[in-house]
Amino acid sequence: MTYHPKSEFIAIMMERGYLADCTDYQGLDEALSNGIVPAYIGYDATASSLHVGHLLNVMMLRWLQKTGHKPITLMGGGTTKVGDPSFRSDERPLLGPEQIDANIAGMQKVFARYLDYGDGDTDALMLNNAEWLDTLNYLEFLRDIGRHFSVNRMLSFESVKSRLDREQSLSFLEFNYMILQAYDFMELNRRYGCTLQMGGSDQWGNIVNGIDLTRRVIDKEVYGLTSPLLTTSDGKKMGKSQDGAVWLNADMLSPYLFWQFWRNTTDADTGRFLKLYTELPVAECERLGALQGSEINEAKVILANEVTTLLHGAEAAAAAEATAREVFEKGGVGDDLPTLTISAADVAEGISIVQLIVKSGLAKSGKDAKRLISEGGAKIDDAPLEDAGMMIDGTALANPIKLSAGKKRHALIKLG
Image (cartoon, rainbow, N blue to C red; front, side, top):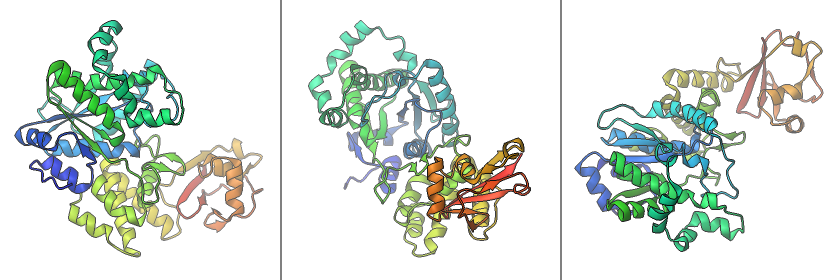
């Protein structure tokens, strides 16, 4: 890509690695250079927290605001009732209105950490597409909006094509999703002057549909910009750990475990992730990413501290680093470790070490815990745990016990 942008926002997107594609580089660049551009990203309310996979696009909205433009977080109170089929092998479970509202409330906590909301020209807006989708008249919608969509063209989009090529069912309900998302873009332009939709590159087809619809129905020029779908250097989808999704809400994943996720970044990804997930200058990100040997570990600590500070605050980042150093470098316990508190009644007749490993989240099942022990990956108070039949009673828990799975995952067990 040899385009030389005039606007600060596009320059940052390109320099830091956020940009996969754009529907009209020059047109968007001109708009960004000539005034405040309202831009949105849509988030369906399928869970009560965002996860690390969302963080790239949240950072794009943050940079948009920092460069003098207006971010819009569009909550999918309406579209969540349908479900986005993009690149999925099956239909999403349908959620009721109460669950959707509860999920939106949980997700709002994260956005407030990254964006400034308010009534000013560049203050962020949080909107809910239920505002216009819930009151649509189906026959009017089909006549006024549906006629602008070619089924032949919709079938050609990669997100739909990949599903049909695998001969997996695509319901009519899901097929409507891309029409609703296109309608969102048009409504946001009509109501709020929004001229840019951003999203992951899997949303390209949906974004293009919205641009076409907006031009056809209300004769307005709008733009689309996508980010790359991130995989780690070992080919895994960004945001997945061995324990599942890396949630951004502290009540679903502790700040310590969030910090630890970033500290465990592979050497090859460190420089790239510093550019994408922190606000450190690009030259510093490249310097840190180029470090070798044990020095790269300090770069990973900087990455973990910077990302955790943005989400959970500087105190949480410092506490997580202190605990990690205590646990890893000094073999200590650490104040911020995930802790399982069990009652005296629970251990009155003893509780198996296997149960404790599962309850503390270090293994998903008793079978996993036994395998961990048999393969030498489990420790109790930093000593190898070799007996899968070991029982723990109240006396053994007079002081907290530290359990470990491998070198990087630990938990405290204490009486409460």
